[in-house]
Image (tube, one colour):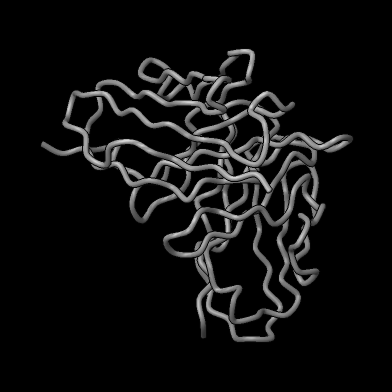
Length: 123
Length: 107
């Protein structure tokens, strides 16, 4: 059973950088899956931030691309998110998720999720 | 970006009711459509992938259908544990996008 666990500061100052890590257990980050970050502002819907493959290849949401960096540490079986120049609009619960590709299945889906971590941007 | 629009935004239903939620994509996405259930304070849970495939462990009262631009999630007989918010999500192209959610409440 794959498990994901987010960690990082719960409070970030405006204009600062949000940094989170997602530790993967019960499976290898070098499996044939992409690994994503998704966020959810309080009381609102879900927004995909970006994804990474264990090779280091990334895809980002164009709406955040200029501020986002996602990286992978295969030795620690984890991947990380950095979001720079944050503002109150970046206050959200941040989730990491496995982007699963099934054999013979159309597209991908987020089949395993972390429990989420609330990051508040405030001075 | 592909826009995903769900309807209704909320609904009230009773235990045992048949519930249908609709998701429309702004362009054809074939069957690259997933459905998730989210309860307050919890991460989303995958229910349906590839428009109509039931995720392992999900009760058979959940079903999905559709292709192209129009999709449906059906709960055949609503149970107390089904009161939650449901999201559709497309994986046809990047960026992945979600619908705005449909909140299913107790009547």
